[in-house]
Amino acid sequence: MRSSGLWLMAPAFVLLAGTASGNDELIKLSKDPNQWVIPSGDYANTRYSTLNQITKDNVKNLRPLWTFSTGVLRGHEGGPLVIGDVMYLSTPFPNNVFALDLNNNGRILWKYEPKQDPTVIPVMCCDTVNRGVAYADGKIFLHQADTTLVALDAKTGKELWSVKNGDPKKGETGTSAPLVVKDKVLVGISGGEFGVQAHVTAYNTKDGSRAWRAYSEGPDDQILFDANTTELGKPVGKDSSIKTWQGDQWKIGGGGTWGWISYDPQLNLIYYGSGNPSTWNPVQRPGDNKWSMTIFARNPDTGIAKWAYQMTPHDQWDYDGVNEMILVDVNVKGQPTKALVHFDRNGFGYTLDRATGELLVAEKYDPTVNWATKVDMDKSSRTYGRPQVVPQYSTEHQGQDVNTKGICPAALGTKDQQPAAYSPDTGLFYVPTNHVCMDYEPFRVSYTAGQPYVGATLSMYPPPGKDIMGNFIAWDAKTGKIVWSLPEQFSVWSGALATAGGVVFYGTLEGYLKAVDAKTGKELYKFKTPSGIIGNVTTYEHGGKQYVAILSGVGGWAGIGLAAGLTDPTAGLGAVGGYAALKNYTSLGGQLTVFALPGS
Image (cartoon, rainbow, N blue to C red):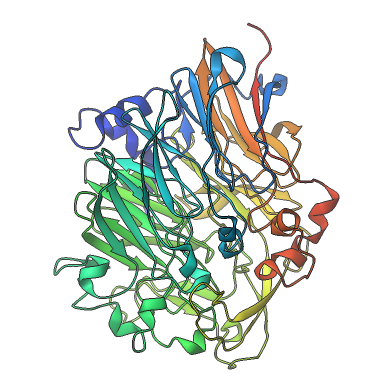
């Protein structure tokens, strides 16, 4: 993210004081560092905590205090919430929800066990993960694998209402964590590998009635665009989506919305990304395929899009744009700017003006990225804002049934959904990354509802040089450079956490919880949990003591071979072969581990 005169100043949630908009309860609770009330910690998705009892000087003394087995063996890709004296967490399929008593080392207060048809499991693309629950107004909200959105009484676990958000028979499934904004709970949908027409939907928290639904592609009245919707400062124009698809292909266009949602209460805008177009064979879907691979800014009351920006037009590599949008304040050439920072699967880190959608910065955050040379930043150019694709690494210029080799990054991206963190103390972003390349061979595929609609065979492997598949990096947006980088044998698939104690936490696929110095990257502490970590690190304070909590349980796309017992190297969309050695370091298991410093 190189830009002259660009300084990061503060996360957007600092500006929430005094605002009259937004969910007042959640805004108030999210300012209390003793709790963790939103899946990403705050509406700005910074994953930063002002707690400072655990510091870079004493973190070496961290110890596990208590553990809790979830009883489920697939990938645990979420993290717990902490509201008052209670911790809430969800599991992979069957998506059990637990309320644990923090006054009694995790005694179970209640357990919710959904009754779901197991035939949804083979329709889930990349493991049976669930990224967590949401809280508001005394309710816990769960998005189940079968797309059922459930509201539970936070005190008793009693089901208050439920609504179906999609149809698994068409390939629609639920993996994402909901987000509550004002009186609405927002939820996306998975299914890009099954040719769904993906969407984000807002339901009224009171009774589950639908408030609005915005599709990723289709006519303006379905994607909720109006005459004022812009891309890079220009009106998108009427039917901007369907003009970029051949015939009615948009009806099976993908654009999954299974990532993270952020919210700016002052601008009253939500932000999220859409995923890959269907099929993965680019020859079969000519055009830009809008609005897959896109950052959306929408009014949470109506769903109407204020602006949109498509990062990877006519995607040929499965570079989903669903990764988190981090909202921070910046100074651009001396002018305060409300910014959105996004580390995309395609290997570019983006900074945009979150009020207008203006593109400020787009730089590679892994030097091995080779599929494009740069993003065109010349506003006078007809290709402004578009990546400049290297023909050698296009997967369609050679036609179907041709294997394009050496593409970096692989389909799982330089970073997948595992969320980065931002510290206002250092002005740095802490980014868990994948260091993986691929061979990509498209083939013709026909659409059948509920059947995979992929059309490509992949192989994954580390880039040339060091035999590593991941890095944990600190990124300086003032220079567009990596400040420090910690190599990892496997991809870093956990979410990061930055704290005011000068410590940054993350987990590894082998199962280590690691703590590093926020300024230097020096490793300060590590502990091997029972299974690989793909969950997100959480911190809270209870009874005057700061705790750190992490779910371990290997799985997700990187760990799908272990999670689902797959052995064909090309299975798991290419991940099984790439991560075959992972079985030598960890095994299945679902466990919460809670850490603290010794003493009362």
